[in-house]
Image 1 (cartoon, helix red, strand yellow):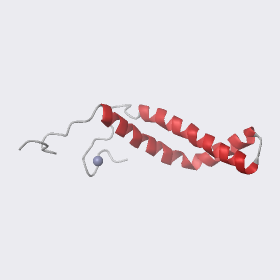
Image 2 (image 1 turned 60 degrees about the horizontal axis):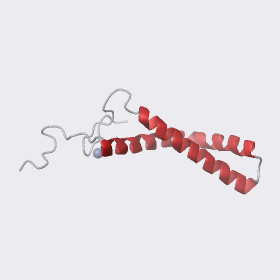
Image 3 (image 1 turned 180 degrees about the vertical axis):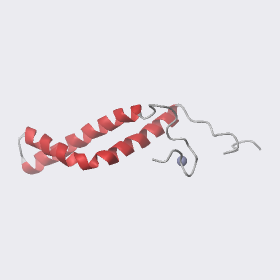
Amino acid sequence: MCPRCSICDLKFQREEGYFLGAMYISFGLALATIALIAALLWAITGWWITKDVTWAVVLFVPLAPTISLFARVLWIYLDQAFDPEPPERGNISAGSD
Ligand SMILES: [Zn+2]
């Protein structure tokens, strides 16, 4: 992961432990994805719920890195919505005319 955005120069990790909040989002996304896969497996195969959930977890594992990255992006958007990082001096001269 790059330390800064190549377009707007936003610093991604603002402080130590910044992405702890992203873990909560990632956990929620993982649970929702596993539940969705399990429901699909149940609808298609009609297996017992234990077997559905076990296979849903197995099928979820390859998706974990993508979901983790997506959770970080959502966390940055959420954080910027509530506590936007001001543009650094000399970088973007917004409204200085
Ligand atoms: Zn950017």
